[in-house]
Amino acid sequence: MKKSSNMIAVITGDIINSRKAKEHAWLKTLKEILKQYGRTPGQWEIFRGDSFQISLAPQLALKAALHIKAGIKQYIGLDVRIGIGIGEGHHQSEKITEASGTAFIRSGECFESLKKYNLAINSGNTQIDEQLNLMIALALRTMNNWRPIVAKSIKTNVEHPEKNQKDIANMLKKSQSSISEGLKRGAFDEIMQMEKIYRNLIQNL
Image 1 (cartoon, rainbow, N blue to C red):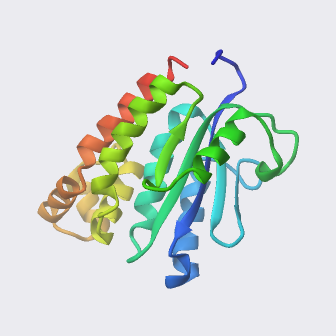
Image 2: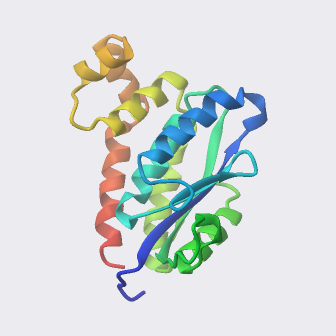
């Protein structure tokens, strides 16, 4: 793939088991997270009740996907399916869902191909995609089992990287030891290391 000033990432996703929870709770959380990465409807939209799409800088895409997953996993029984596409984007419309480009095509194809795993990447570079998707598949063994308190701790850490565990504990009104244990169970450090590797790899696209 040739480097281009129009290179973007597009996340296409939906909520798993959305009808089993109160919509106003998870929907509010999803909107709050998406707002941190852009504006609606030009950069993100929620449609068909529980589906969403967002365009953003490629280096932010995996972090945003992890952020969304942690936000949704706060709710018992819920999870999210996400396909990340990286490529060119052409915003010829005021709505992201009407935009075009290879990033949108790859995101949609990636999302539609999700079966065994609920998070994957399609950058158009087979070698890089194989590396990233293997790491993601391994990480999902832990992430898919995040309990609500673990997910909430991870979400808060992603949103406040400048804060230490004591600060996070105070924000969540939990003990520092419980936050520390939750982050360990959720493999937070390892997952953020994966996110760093992702950012390094996509620089070669």
